[in-house]
Length: 177
Image (cartoon, rainbow, N blue to C red; front, side):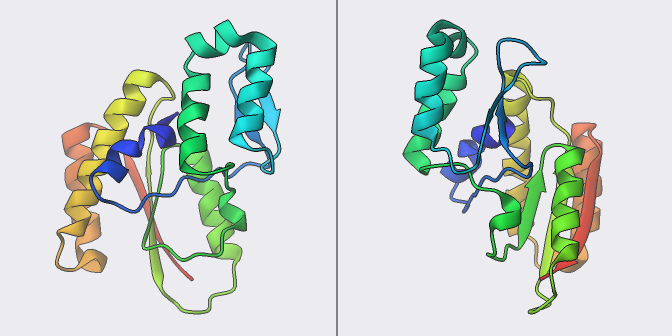
């Protein structure tokens, strides 16, 4: 849910991309142990129509249809991080498991340009309230990073300040493309 709240960050002028890291796209289902699972080739429109067919009331009430409707106006389908060959200055994850998957992928790539990429994790619970608060926290973090004179040398101090302010632990690693 958090990545879908990052529209707050995009609206503040940042170039934002959202990716999945798993082997499939998982959306909440009728029970915690019954998620809806889709291939990354499945479009948001196809997911939307499938969930409307399965239980329109449930997926409207839990916000999944709204999220898919918004997503399909941004891009056709979900993207998998491991399939993207673009280079980023900053990758922010919202769950330690995802952070680990991003690091595993970046560290398995052959280093070509030696361009650094800062990978930061901010653990955010996957619910509407935490996702909204997390999006604002990430936006503020991005604004502070943008205004640093030397991101490479100021990042650790900046993250320490954010940890104290937000009372959340941050994980940070620098990888190279």
